[in-house]
Image (cartoon, rainbow, N blue to C red; front, side, top):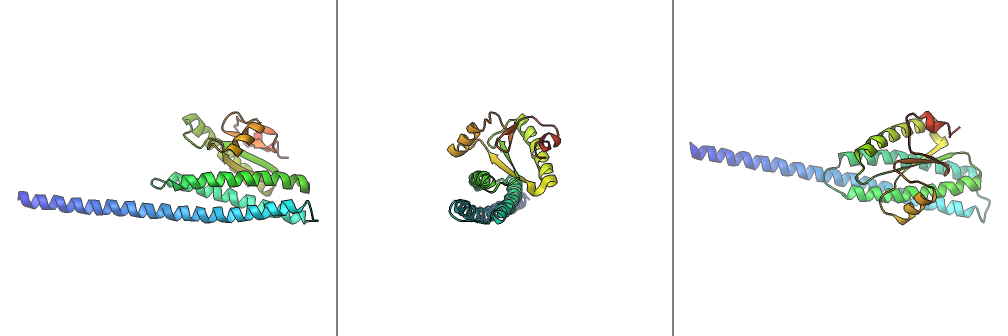
Length: 218
């Protein structure tokens, strides 16, 4: 009887270990698939930003089509906003593979370069779109910051849905230690996180409604 119970226990243990390890394997493969997708998005984004940078610089030497350049920039802004939402969802589901965090940082640099390029295109082409940069705490935000950032993200999504292509919404983590981002944060007077920077001029660190943002976008 005791021997039978022993074999039953061992059998159950083996089955449990197999299921557990299979779950780990499936989870790892899922995370790897997510990272591959982000890698593909980032590579495409890098190519498009490089192309836009070349177009923007070309304005200095040739009569380039500003309307097309602005339209391409707006299209790209919409796409990276959608990808930022997908990456955020991936990170919420992430439990095993930390490479997603590295890809997030990569995207922060891409979005920062896109923001700078958008400023230059707006000036050279006399465009009327608004840049709305959302600086937030990425690493170990406090409970208060988490709650506040959830509110900010919700309100900014409402603004983007309402304003569409009139707004370049650019989320950037401001605490990853990149000198370029630190320089811009300091230059534009961002002293607390989260902060929303509108058209490189208006800073908002306290919000309760989308209207408080929208009044600066009319």
